[in-house]
Every structure is written in structure tokens, then in C-alpha cells.
Image (cartoon, rainbow, N blue to C red; front, side):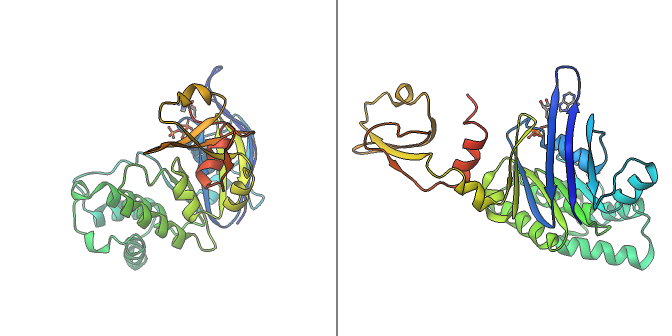
Amino acid sequence: MQIQIDQISKRYSKKACALHEVSLNIGPGLCGLIGRNGAGKTTLMRIIAGIMEATAGTVYFDGQTMKSSAMRKHLQEKIGYLPQDFGFYPNLTVKETMDYIALLHGLSGKKKRTRIQDSLEKVHLNKQADKKVRELSGGMKRRLGIAQAIIHEPEILIVDEPTTGVDPEERISIRNLLTEYAGQRIVILSTHIIEDIAQSCQQVAVLDQGKLKYQGDIGSMIRAVSGVVWECSLPLTADYKNMLHEYTLVSNHYMEDGIRLRVLGEKAPITGSVQAAPTAEDAYIWMIGGLAK
Ligand SMILES: Nc1ncnc2c1ncn2[C@@H]1O[C@H](COP(=O)(O)OP(=O)(O)OP(=O)(O)O)[C@@H](O)[C@H]1O
């Protein structure tokens, strides 16, 4: 399966343009959609999932579109979606929740039981099957959200910020299970945590203020900013914030003999600055035009 996003724009009102002519190709594997709050990630995911109409542009799934209702139904069966704020019934157990979702997908009998078991195994929740949803941790709820999204074995899985607010161990676990699910399928994951993308995604798309700033692999994204990352040292008393107002400060470490800074900029910030090897975080910050002021 290949998803081709062609010139997608979304306007919520005259003033609020959430997406501006976004074009993007997504193939099998894990694709990370990254951008700061309000960049347009949720809007784009909802449009791909077919639960929101674009104002302009088309999404093609192997050349097919959701323009007719029959085609929409057909394509939506190939898609699993986990929204950011998935609402569970707290008093249902994990198994009852899955049972309910399975019914919505028209599953019954042995097939339903097998799919529920398989999905819970994939997200490592089979031991919690009889626990009530309200007793689950935040990370477990996210994993249950993923289980409900994959119960119909979709070719495309779309998950909106699955790692936000969970502890580091859960983040790694969620990343790993999404990678395992991907295989030859497409998994699109949105995040504002660059590490999630750098550690697991073959493809990355950077959105900023509704515009696509980058699409490609993470290695090329990092290479694209070589030459703009600088390290320099200043005396402890230096007013470095004023000296570097044309630069983006990535980090500042106070050492015994001075302040060690890492900054992004076209030119060396001060005499004695040395170029540093860029990281995924440097590349992302540079591509979105620096940190929010
Ligand atoms: N229903 C709506 N009506 C009006 N404006 C909206 C609506 N939904 C989103 N927006 C605006 O569209 C822009 C993109 O929002 P979106 O939720 O897609 O961004 P996001 O990247 O997912 O952000 P976050 O990381 O905070 O979830 C924002 O400026 C937001 O305020």
C-alpha cells in the first residue's frame, strides 16, 4: 500500500488554516509525523483516516480515493485509528472493551475471540484481560487503544501522540510494538518527541504551522543541517542571551570554568566556536525555524 497525500489544505474558518497544500508520500513502515502543538498533525491524521474532509486536495490509497461512500467504507476497513483522547468506558474490563469494538467491526464467534486474543497479545495486555479499564495505568490505556485500533488487522494504522505523558519504559514499549506491527503495513505516528522518531521511524515528516517542512529519512534530515550546529564556551558572567539573539540556543551547561553552549546558526556565533555533529533534535529545531519564543 502507498498513501499519496496530494495538496491537502484544511481551513476551519476564514482565519484558521490548519493545513496548507501538504503533499506527502507514505510507504510501508513506521512514518513519524512531528511538529509542535497546533502544527496540524491531528488534522492531517483525521483527513487520512477519512473522518474529516479536506478543504482542498486528495488522499490516494494505491490510487483510490474516499470520494464515494462505498469506497470510503471499503478503504476505512483498511485503516485503524487511535485518536489522542480515546474515550473508554471505565467500568468495562479490557476484554469487554475489545468485545464491544469487535462487534462494531462485525466480528463474531471464533474469529472474534481469536482477533481479541491476538490484538491483546500484540500489545502485551493479555494478562490484564479481566482488569477494569479504570484500573489500568496511562500507558496500559494507550496500549489498549492500539489493540482496539488493530482488531480488524488494518493495513494502515494511524496513532495520534501515543507516547505523550507515559513513562520512558512505556514509551519504548509502545514504540517497539508499533514497529513490530508495521512490518509491510503503514503505521503513521504523530508526536512532538523527536526521540520517538529518531529511534524508530524509517520515514519522517515535519509539519510547522500547517506546512510541510521536510519529508524523508531521519539520516538525511540530520545531514541536511550539518554546518549549522556550533559549540562555544563563554565566561560565567557573560550575558550570552543578548549576544546570541540571532541564534537558537539548544543547550547551556554551567561548568566550573564557564558556560558551554550549543547553538544553531548559519555562521560561527563567536571566535573560537567549533562545529558539532548534528543530532535529530538539532535538525528538527532548525527545520521548524527555532524554538518558540
Ligand atoms: N475544530 C477546530 N476549529 C478551529 N480551529 C481548529 C480546530 N481544530 C484544530 N484547529 C486549529 O488548527 C490548527 C492545527 O490543529 P491540530 O490539532 O491539527 O494540530 P496538532 O499538530 O495536532 O496539535 P497538538 O499537538 O496540540 O495536538 C491549530 O491552530 C488549531 O488551533
